[in-house]
Each structure stands twice: as structure tokens, then as C-alpha cells.
Length: 260
Length: 267
Image (cartoon, rainbow over all chains, first blue to last red; front, side, top):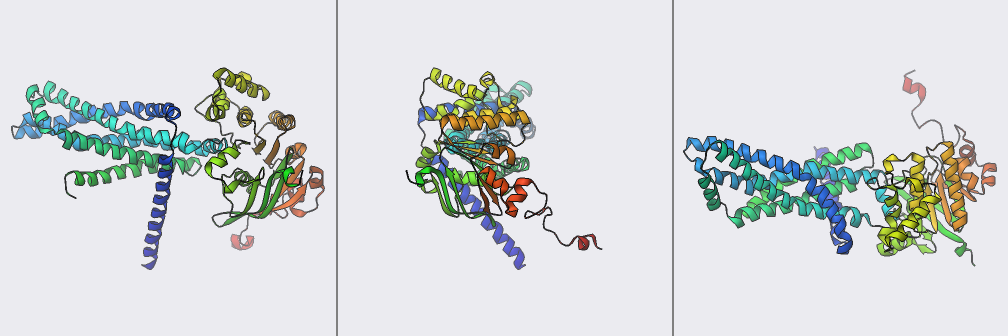
């Protein structure tokens, strides 16, 4: 019994230690004040790699999720003769929850894992050490553009996901199942509040973008420099980021709905 | 000129450990200015760690490392990076950036630290690549280079800021005899022509000793031998003798510590 309590305490200490290291790491990255003219090209490059290259998976997922949501929603609403409410159902689900959460999970799987693997490989092949020895700060040159690119990309990807999902539900609901287009759009417009629904969804995505990218760059930078180490770091990124997104989603929702 | 100024690097009473494992225990080394110093020792003796301590990528537990008369571990980040501009390092794995071509790899430090016009930068990079015989490979990606070519590109990159101190981490490991010969000649020629101070970390005894002015042998957390290559080859210290002559058993045992053999076999 005592042994188990000791083990638990030891795990707690390790967790706090790592949290402290990752916090200091984040602080060091954020506190770097680069000259914008020099930093901008690196940021644009990473926005392309992290954001633009994640667009395809986000668009396709958004389309199908919107379509499935419309199909499922229609079948249930039909039982109550309320199919004209399909627009609200889809829009509220997508803007409040599905948009930010699913985009963040996709982002963690696609961009987060790639970030960790890339930085981990740079660490393993001594690219980061050689940069340090050339008097170039890797936190500024490698980590900072990636962190900011993730922070900027995810909210934009989330908004795109929301729009495409609504479009997908329109295709299924209106074009296929025959819901009246006027009712679909007007009910949606009446139900969705710009501040409560859309802005809160975007705020969630900003938080998720920051946390997912932070986890990804931290895991990459502090990876054990072996093939197995990179594999483990990549897995950790996806697992930790997904859990963090789901956990934070609950906390943020509770705060936004005034539960806390 | 006093004795201190004759040494580019002075390491005194250096102690370092990783977790519980002691790597260096009261180590003293001086690297004379303008000479090639070879640091040799068996695998795992801490040779690469020593270079990382000189470059301040690691901090010692105690002791001092003076680089060009500056205590490198007492510097803040800005001052440290200023000192590092005078240090070039050839990494064991090359450390080339895999997402940019050979030209951009060599140009990297110039782009980061200077505002040279593009045509001047191009000339400097091509001159550097010409010195290592790879001007024709400037458009290749690192993945298209052989091991020896990658080391030579890494060498050109390390030299681009005209360092005063060059550190080579296992430059000959895994190279064919021709490439090895090329690298030996390059290191020697660059050192002599440019008036550099060079530190070669290696366990290739013959190759490193052939161009070194001074040799240190590290084993068992300490310096076990020091002198000119000739003195080292004649040294009767059992650690030095075993390492230099490649004897399979001796102070560094052939067998990893284990329980009694017969007991282990259940006899």
C-alpha cells in the first residue's frame, strides 16, 4: 500500500516537473522578440506547412460530418415533424462543439504529429545542435514560427470546417432530402447567435491551437534522440493533445455557459 | 606573450556527470593556439561531451572552461552566441539541414548573421565549396550526398564565418580510405592556411595522430595520457598502451562486469 502511494507521489512529481519544464520552454519561446521583417518569411513558410497543407483533411472531414449530421438529424426531426429545424441543429452543433473539437483533433493528428516528428528528427540528426553552434537560436528560428503558425492556423481552419459542414448539411438536407431552403437558412439565422455561438467556438479553437502546437513542439524538442524516441514522442503528441482538447472543451464550455 | 595567451582553450578541474554517472572527474586540458589537438579515447569515454562543454551546450558540475580567455559558461545568451561565432563545429552526423540544398546549407550562417548582397554571398559560398571540392554539388540536396560528401559540406558550412577554433567530432568514423585521406588533408590544410586552432575528437588513432600536434587520451573519467603523437605511442601507461595499440583486454576489460561464469551457467 505504502509502495503504491509512493509510486503515485513519484508520478505526481514527474508530472509537475515536466509541466514546469514545458511551461518554462513556452515562456522562453514567447519571450523571444524577433524582428518582424526577419520572422515573417519563416512564419509564412510554417503557415503553409501547418495550415494550408491541413486544409484538405479539414475540408473533406467538414463536408462529410455536415452531411452525416444532416442525415441523422433529419431522421430524428422527421418523427416530430420538425425537419425545418435541421438548419439550427447542424449550425449549433458545428459552431459550438464539433467545429472546434474535431478540427483540433484532426490538427493534432495531421500537423501536430508532423511537427513533433520533424523537430525530433532535427534533434536526432544534430541539426538543432549545429544551429546552436552557428550562434542561431533554435527557439527563435525553429520553434517560434511553428508555434505561432499553429496558433494562427487552427482558428482559421475551424471557421472553414464550420462553413463546409453547414454546406454539406445543406447538400443533404435541402438538395437530397427536400427540406425547404428558405426555412433551412432562416431558422439557422434566427437560432445562431454570433457572439454566443460563433465567437465562443473561435475562442475555443484559439485555445486548442495554442495547446496542441505547444504540446507538439515541446515533445519534438525534448525527444529522446533515437528512432524509437521519435515514434514515442509523436504518439504522445497525438494522445496528450487529443486528451487536452477534450478536457479543455469541457472546461471552456462550462465557463461559456456560465456554469462556473 | 604569456602562457595563458598561447592557449585558445583552457579547461581546469572540470567535473561533469549525467544523472548519477560520472563522465569527467577533475580534468585539465589546454588546447594550444594554432595547433591541432586530438582528443582520443574509447567509445563512451565522453569525447563528444567534452566538445559540448567547450561549446557551452552543456554546463559543467564544477571547473572552468576558458575559450579565448573567456569563461564560456559565465556568459549570457547574447555574449555566448557572440563567442560561438568564432567557433566552428563539424558534427558526427554532419547536422546538415535536410530541407535545403547544399548551397543554402553553407549560406545559412551568412544569411542569419550578415546582410551581404546576394552576389557576394554566392561568391563566398562557392569559394567555400570549392575549398572542399564540392562546388559542383551546390544544387544537390543532403539526401543525395554520400557520407563523405556530407561531412565535407558540413565542413564548408562550419568554416563559412571564418572561425578561430574548429572542433571536429569523429570526422573519420565510417569513411572509406579515400574519403578519410581527403578529410585528413582538408583538416590539416585548412588549419595551416587559415591559422586555426583545431580540436579533433576521434577514436581513429592512426588518422588523428597523423595530423595532430598534441594528443590527449581520455579514459575512466580522466586524462590518462598526454603528449605528442610520438610520446603517446611510446607511453607505457596501461590505459594508453591498450588504447593506442588496440589490445583487446587490459585496463578496459573485454568482458562487461557480470556474475561468475560457472555460476551463471549453473555448473
